[in-house]
Image (cartoon, rainbow, N blue to C red; front, top):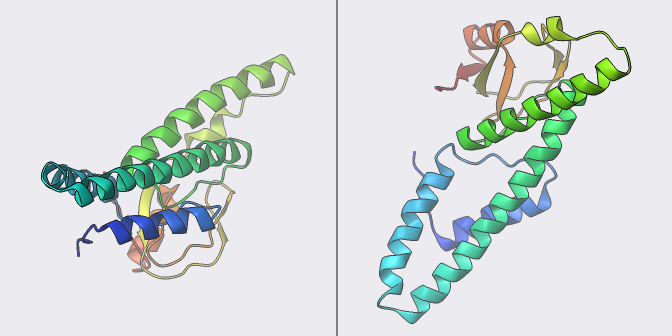
Length: 179
């Protein structure tokens, strides 16, 4: 079911992001729907002063939501490089940003590891990951990559090892997210 975008809906998304240190669960098409909402408001704003004010406020709130999520993603990328924990609740575009930042951080960390004479951790990174959406609450567990995963709530999305994802999908506790 597609969520109807209203000013209050956008404001609620902002409040949720402000309250939580984690990424809040937004629909995958949240920002695409926001684009449609803004296009409609821009048309109305040409004829109506109140619509213009609402448009400006909505744009400010949307930028705030994105900035907050962007900051969280950068912090989560650093955490992921250090601990191997993969965050949940990213949209496709946010996942691309996350992957890009992680790649840069791993490259930087690899340089420091070589400088300090530490062994390369390549074998650990050979695990294939897939994104799934949880259909029920799942307690914390250890993945095939020996990293702690979860806990996850119904509706959360996460990138987890393919073998673990297949077991969760097969048992009806999750579904694969289309890429």
